[in-house]
Length: 459
Image 1: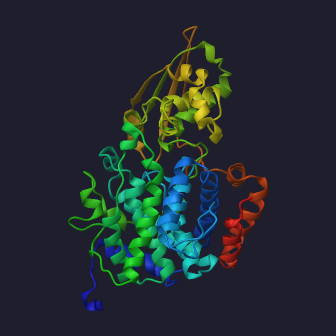
Image 2: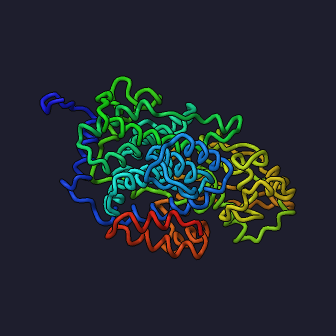
Image 3: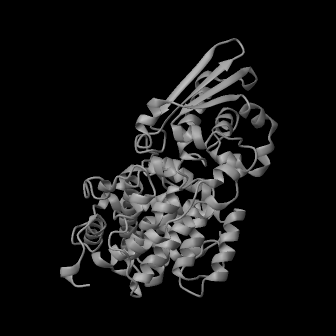
C-alpha cells in the first residue's frame, strides 16, 4: 500500500503512536522501562511457579509436539521451539495459578500475554534486553487500551474472557516492536489479531481448564498475527474500531475513543495491579477486608454465625460459587476466599492445593457466607478502583464490618519493592531467585543471553 493510500482511522492512529514510540522517534520514559522490568520479574515468577501445574504440563506437551525446532525457551522444558509455541507454553504457565498481574479497568492480565510473546520473539530475533523492555511497554499499552475500549464490564458479563480477547493486540504489538514493524505493518497486525480474539467465561459455569490457556492463546495469536504480516498477509485496516472491529462487536458499550485518548499522557503500565493473592482480583477487596477483620478483632472462627459480602455486580454474578469443587473454583469463589482469609493464608498458593479443598474447616466456614451481593457504590468505581465489603455476625449478635476500596497491590496501594521481591522469591525459591533476578535487573544494559540462560536452568 502506498503512503497516499494509508488509512486514517483509530486503529491506524494507535499503530502510529506505538511504532513511533518503539522506533525511538519519541523516547520511552525510563520510568516505564523500570516498570516493565518489574512486570517481567513478577511474570517470570508466575511462570516458574506455574510450570508444575497439570494444565501447564498439558499445554507444554501440545506446544512441543506442535512447534518445530527454534531458539525460543519453553520455561521448565528441556528444549526450545518456535516463537508462537513458546509464547503459548509460557503464557499457559504465567496464567496457571491466578498469580499474574492485572489491568483492573480492562479486566485483563497483560503480563501473562505480553511477556511470553515478547520473550519468545526477542529470543527468535536476537534482540537486546532494552528492546525486550520496550516491547513490553508498547504491548501493555495496546492490550490495556483494547481492553478498556471494548467496554470491559459489558464485554465480560456477555461471556467473553477479556484476557484472551484483548490480549492478542498486546502480544501482536510486542512482537511487532521486536520485528521492526512500521505503523502500516502494525495496523495490519491489529486487523489479523482481531480475527484471533477468542475465549469465553464458561469455565465459571461448568468448570474445566480452559481459563488456564486463555493467556496462552492470546500470546500465540498475537505472535502469529505479527508473523503473518512479516510474511506478507494483510489485515483489515480498522480491526479495532471499524464497523465490525473488535471494539464494536464484542460489547454493548463500545468506547473506541479510549484507544487513543490521552496517548502519551495516560500509560497502561502505570495502572497495573500485582496480585498478593492467587485468586481472581475482583474479590481481592473482600479477601483483604476479611483478613483485616481477623487481625483487628482476633476472630475465633467458631463464634462466626453468618458472613455477608458485597462487591461489584461482576463479583456477585461470577464469583458467587462453591469453592470446594476444583482449584479453579476455589480461586474464583468469594465464599472460599473469605473463609481462607479468616482461617488460612490466601497469600500462600498452597491454600488452593487440591488437598485443601476438602478441608472441613474451610468448607464449614465457606458455608457461613450467606450472601454475595452487588452494591451500587462498588459498581460506580468498577473496575478502575475495586471495592468490597465483608460483614461478620458473631454468636453474641455483634457485627464486624470492613470495607476495602483500592486493594493492596493495585495502583491505589502498590506493593513495595520489598513485597514484590518477597513474592518473587516465594514463587521461584531463594537460590533461583538470586540468579534470575540478577539477569532481569541487568537486562536494560545487556543482551538476552544471560536471561535466556537463567530461564533454562531448572534449579
